[in-house]
Length: 278
Image (cartoon, rainbow, N blue to C red; front, side, top):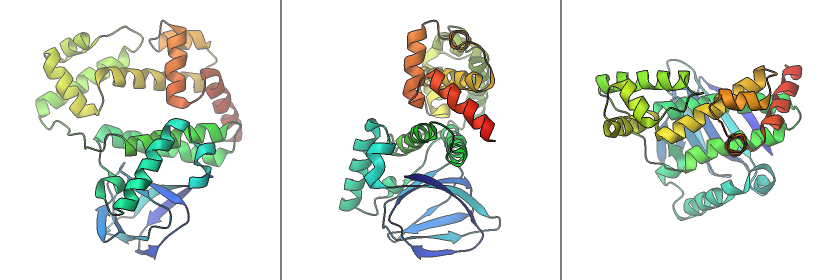
């Protein structure tokens, strides 16, 4: 059981609890979550994980309405709805909550701006998939919920964004260059050269800015680029793999399935069916 609740807060929501777990993805700030005697302020893109039956309330801060997407799921259905790799993390999370139900890092996950933006995009995609009821929507919804949960549960230390405006601009330029050359076999040395930085400095500031290593960012961008082509074009999957920077079709399938928990063909079918429902 996975379902989405769009939430707009323009007033306080008194203390309550549910028999389902809640993953809250903040879209617009303006509210505070109160639970276990502690408070956590909404920031766009941050996620909150609230255990079933845990009392909590939302307080409106104003002046503008706060918005969020709340994804509810049943612990009894986890094995059916989520890939096996997420289960140990969920179980460990709930075990830690029993030991310390107010442990702050288990509730809120502060990440980089890039990760927060990705959370918002994935949350909106998940809402759209759940609303569409298209073929394989449960599999795709499980994949996106898994990604949101993994981002919340893994590596909880906040990614510190480099505030140096010069390095900031150089990394932004490098990212634009990388995204424009995904089909090329660009290396980290090539990207550092484009940014006018040493490889060591580029590696350090790139991770601080994106929250990912160079390899992780390239893989993530290539797979997302391929997913966009699969959803919009009738081009062959082999050509899309090459356009996305994969010369090895088997490696492309492996990376795509790792990210989306389905093959490129299945993803294309889901997106095609969803298009007929909208």
